Image 1 (cartoon, rainbow, N blue to C red):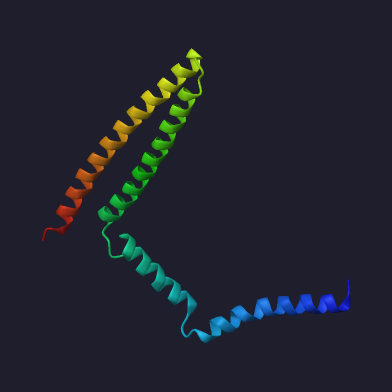
Image 2 (image 1 turned 90 degrees about the vertical axis):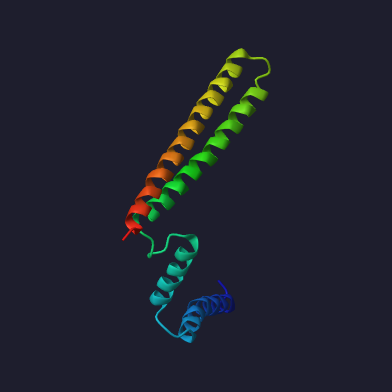
Length: 132
């Protein structure tokens, strides 16, 4: 390798290693404390801050999981519809698509019931924990 090319590569690598340290030196305070403060503000804005009670936090987690399952169910239904549309008259593919749609609707009912039950139970727990 050419000496000039080596020198340029070393200069670029040194600059890439030194500049982040200089940028951190300009910012006063401990970076770990800043990261913790940022995490707390983001968590508070998202509704999962450290000030939230255990039932409230469990409710947030359950809502996220049930929302994810709903999105997964949507993709499952889209797959079944695609299978049905591309069956081309093949009865086995149509029956498979109908079976998937039936299972997806049953899954939707289970998800809605789970949401309703968890919403009721967690709402009751929050009301009980907030009464003096």
